[in-house]
Length: 137
Image (cartoon, rainbow, N blue to C red):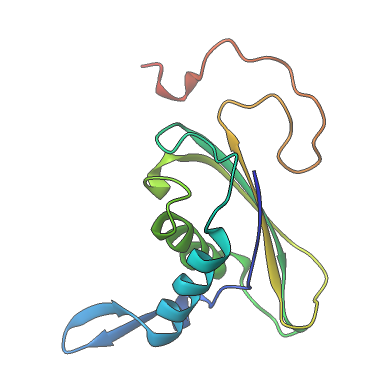
């Protein structure tokens, strides 16, 4: 599954502290709503309760310095809120890469069942995995 989403606010702008509580900011709520609107009617969704691998291509809106990890939380929470998956704890592999800036910014997200048979970055074939050893203990 591939989603094209707006560029998310950084974690520094996603949360607000108010009277000792941590809340999602007005901008964060607006971003969630944009993601929900774009995800409505999406077909071919991955299993909502399975293990997932997720790859993000981040196209920032300009050339300002940004920490790549600061955009992940808003995007992951918004996709969960939109019903793409039940909980972002399902994500066992998370890959983010910065791309060249484009006006307005954009996030391209590819979601795969995990373990997967194709690389979430380049799409090349991967060896078949017998089991998911992450939980073998």
